[in-house]
Image (tube, rainbow over all chains, first blue to last red; front, side, top):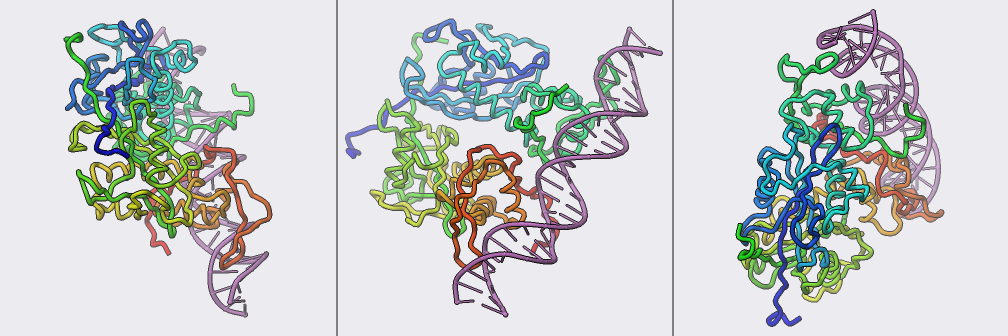
Length: 243
Length: 243
DNA sequence: ACAATAGTGTCTTTAAGACAATATAAC
DNA sequence: GTTATATTGTCTTAAAGACACTATTGT
């Protein structure tokens, strides 16, 4: 090992964002249209290189969240997903991308004022099924992000990050149904969610009504870990014909 | 944004390994003694920079596993833990380290023939309690690795990675007890583990005996996801005085 | 009244946890 | 025999899941 003559190789550092939200009861991910090579014209995750050598990676994630999606990272759930550094993943050279998972509440705004404004919400099903042909290894990153979200729904309060400051229990249920891609019994869900101490808290006598009986409003509780967990049904148990 | 004149900053890419194993029914992590600055004389995680700009990150993890711990990565559980890239974490410059979690079966060998042979197994308690003063942000990385292992024990078959090819149920129980740092009822654990389909499979009539009744031997089943999970007891429920 | 959604009660099945009892080895 | 560990059984409680029923709105 010639330690004196050898110097370690450097790589470019990028940040990529998997931003998930609910739109029309469906799980969506934010994608941007690439305007330059490589993969010009393809859809890709929002993201980019570090601004300068002193920028923190998490700071860069917040900056991209603001620049590319007009979202305030301080008010969103944001966690690191992992590093993607396979040598051939970017034709421009050795790029190590650090992916982040962000959860945005489903607000009315479509995407808001992006500079290039080439950002659209796309159903994750379109991505997972491979219909969409994302740039780089971004499909794999989306898959990992969705799986992370699915897993964390079980034993953390992550589902609330998809909701506004206040929400109804059926809105919360729609989050679980959309992310897991299954249907849940509203009555059992209602009881279960209320039985998890510190998950949600009732907020005043205010109610939200559209068609049927008005629903109580809740806000986030103080617990981030759920006991007992909201268990995802075992896919092996899908035997009988469901309604 | 002056895209033509600006070029993105580069960073050095390192790989760090959190290698966990069981020794004397206690969870240990492999640490090496640093011989050069920075942090010369401190304990650190095994790892190092990428060998060349074409080396894959996972390949580098395997290489370091071999070089620094004389362990065959192909026979170990190895998964990415995450990227650590805070600007000030390495005084030599901007270094992004990609951490991996490895689980080694508790074999007789102490550490085996490392070149520098400065590698020792250290109880994770010594690290988590802060008694040990690791280099860089390696204490945080160990904390994340241990927490990952603790969580995955619940709903994956990761515990088996701590055991040899065949093992007894009480050996498996010791893994859960050491990693979680709690005691479990052997009788309930026995039944529960056998009730998880595909977790473990009996292997022949061979038995292992030391003091009491010889125990049956098992090997890994074909399932990696556990249904139902091996739930970690809720720490809030620790009320009564335990035996 | 009716349709639609919210919320409660009840029952059955399954898993968790405490712990008695039995089995098979070493000594 | 005694001691030590492995394995089985039984009982109680908690949670999961199915599903009837009541409540409160808009139309």
